[in-house]
Length: 171
Image 1 (cartoon, rainbow, N blue to C red):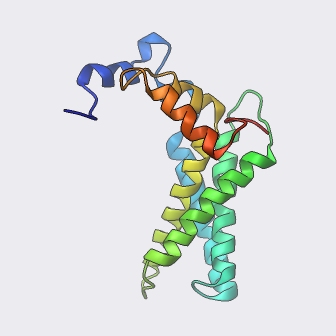
Image 2: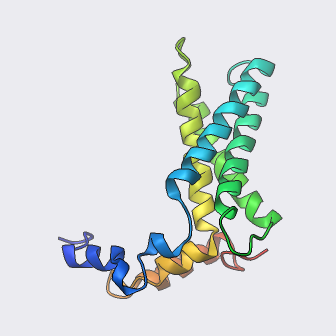
């Protein structure tokens, strides 16, 4: 079937015997990245709700900041040479803002506070996506995979150049 990976291609992608899989070489804990982003988004988002009410500017701003700080901290903490980069943080902040705005538009307010959890999850999704897209090690690991007839790397580079012409990891 078109667009699906075969079992052999999946084994290649996740095979640790040949230098590690794309996720192992990236030196990131994906669950830790998502959890840290979610927890900080929820904590600061709840602070924003107490300060300005649900769906207020304070709620969205603090939730966005929490998600971005959590993702940025988790993405840089285990690097051999951690680099603090304002450009990368701003891209992660933009991803978190996109998630927060989607949550504000799509998640209904309820009396059980599940909307706070759901909006924190969407904020974390945005910030984690941006954190992965701006992690040079992860991007190199994924783009090194030669699936889809060898077109994967070229397609990825074209998409990335539209987002950030200097490439992932540039400060």
